[in-house]
Image (cartoon, rainbow, N blue to C red; front, top):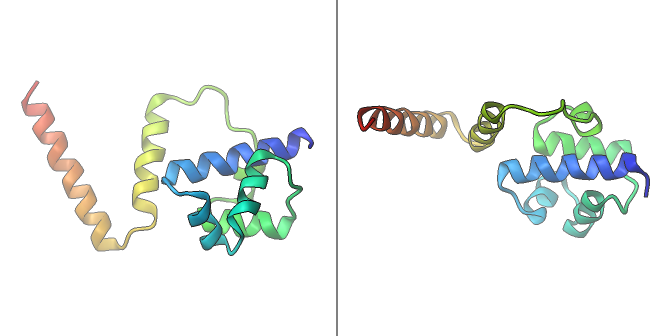
Length: 114
């Protein structure tokens, strides 16, 4: 398959991993079969624009984010921000508040131990 589809597959897999989702979870959220998700991620299946749109919506990213190559050498801070953002993305406002309070408390405790 073409490098375009390989790149889309890598970006879909990366976004799915950032959220800690299985192919089954992404498939359920996007209304697609998990084996189809696997074929997309491996770049062995041509993906339609409609399917790309459903994946982007399920992953809460722009379609362009699944098409564009990422900027080279993202900083470690950006990677951690993305991971934390992934934890918060599907939570209710009260759950987000609880997670934020927990992280804030842990951060204070770590500063005190220095």
